[in-house]
Length: 143
Length: 143
Length: 143
Length: 143
Image (cartoon, rainbow over all chains, first blue to last red; front, side):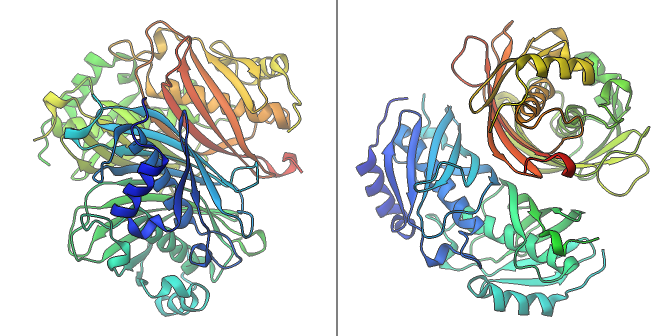
């Protein structure tokens, strides 16, 4: 799986096409297996008790997996999530960003399947795991 | 499964404890099987192309299932999602709200399992299906 | 979704192409939403304590959903499961068959998504819920 | 997570309590993260075309995750699967055993969450990924 978009190219793509998420989600590193992606946690992600909300964790996994796929297939604003499963494992650490470590498990012509382990920055124990499938538009899939 | 919170009680709970979501999510009806819950779709839920984002659909399922459970066990701000699976089936209709029809499949002392079919208001074909498990704090579970 | 294979046609297909499962799984009814499918529970499906094993419940959901799809698209031995999620809700009743009530949620050209509620014969409360996605071979998909 | 049952102890437990699966599933290694578990593939696991069936892959993940948990909490015949998600990624290699590499993601007093990557013996690309939650009987959970 050759890398066709690096960290800077992914950031530029996100800023242009997904301005609303580019303020809070950044690619730390395009990795051998996928990508490491950060959510800058702020008040709008929190639920009562100071926990990061389920939808915010879902959004990090969703965008992180999307960016890992794009790092291998290039800019595809039309790739869409077709399914997702998430287990919420532990309460995130208070005041810490979240990091999603994404692995690409399959990159086919029409479907890409990835998983992600999500941790609070500085902690070893995972906060959540997620797996998602993305459909890739036919004209642009990997051959 | 006796109903212990009606539509008005759920709305009051949501407004008090989850002010940020009370503006966009409302219980249409507490049903025999669970609850019917509406997301007032606005610009902040949209992705490029006008589609409602995956995280917004996830949030509707998550909050809708939470409210269906509360309608049977009473106000429990501490109940938390432990797992979720979602299939995204079709592009939502442009400019329409989303409705989640939640069924309670199991309401145990410690875990509640529900599923939801999500449709665009006025359409029959589902936009997404979701299933989620909630952990109920020990002191407050159904006996 | 026109029905193109009825109960008898599905049974004949199963016996010819899946002899090993045709002895224990039968279509009770092709329904408006999908199909109702029975697993004749026997000793080989049981785990210690007399519970039907998880893999046996998975197999019922998998074959039941496959048959529901075939009832609409015709005999496709090559359709394959691409993803599955299952929640195990209650211990099945001792000595009772299991029934899977399958709903077709999406029947596209390339992917079909279904869910199933599984009950012990004669009981109302579900034993399990499952959702699965099947990939349909390109040449044979619904137009 | 201290290891309390090694490879031999797990094999003895499986043979005594799950005779039907002990003939085909064996623990290769108790690993730092969980366990590596082998399915000896035979005719009874195959579907038309020579593919290992979905239920056989599910069973390997289910038993493999169960054994990984037991390696840390000791013999618990009553631990039960409460939920599972599986993505089927590639056709297994013909005539090869399957190996499940299980990671324990959370080992709580009441719930254990694990995932597994499943490969054909001798191949790098995964055949499937699975995540499962097990409920642990209250009297025996990890403190």
